[in-house]
Image 1 (cartoon, rainbow, N blue to C red):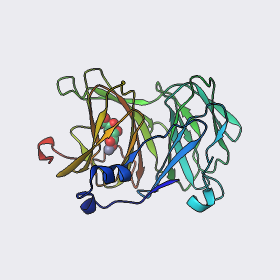
Image 2 (image 1 turned 60 degrees about the vertical axis):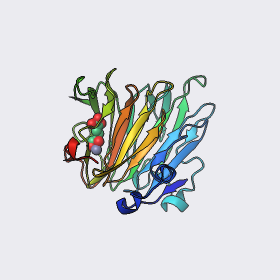
Image 3 (image 1 turned 45 degrees about the vertical axis):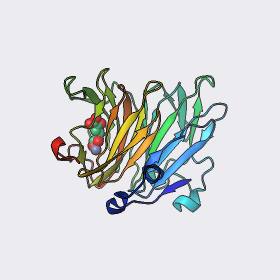
Length: 280
Ligand SMILES: O=C[C@H](O)[C@@H](O)CC(=O)C(=O)O
Ligand SMILES: [Zn+2]
């Protein structure tokens, strides 16, 4: 498991591109029949990529659960949320099968012992993007479709940021311990996300970008508002955003991304917005 310790904003000011990427950038999440795992010490959030091709892949494949979590099974004291970003697949939670189409989301309750992933068609495998947070009680495991998500249209074509925020794992849709997750879809011609940007010291966030057309990239913006940096993201890459960091992006085309948050609070609108002209 790839372990990332928490970085301090005063040190990050002096990071090179390579150091920034080693700390905050996640790539290569989807390798056939494996679980790729990144454990961030920021709010102890875990990011997983699972691409089952020929096998049924358990959530802890290749992970020493006792060594890394000190629990007997992965979700003993954790909850998880996931999206399918690939072909049709099935997630089984203790024998209950959830058929997952493209962009379907599943919330998995704390205490779920067995979780497995498989694809319906090995020539078009599913890609499960999973984020897990520490939890203190079991809520209900539930599949949430794009239709069921709360929709928040935002931005305008004039400011190149017309997009819809789809809130899937969110207090308005279902209760969780601390995890919230959703999908933001940009319209063609719009390239900016989360601008005007914000921080939220009371929770961290992880972004994964997809639907980035071939030969295009997204510049993920991070850092304190007066000390910004960027990380160039390829399709399916993810970025860890500590609570002190902005998290915004500008693409060379439109794109879609999944956000996941965890920490003290779940109030989506609890943001410290930074006036755009104050950015440095
Ligand atoms: O705290 C909220 C998160 O940063 C995202 O939901 C913002 C976002 O998707 C957007 O503005 O496009
Ligand atoms: Zn945010």
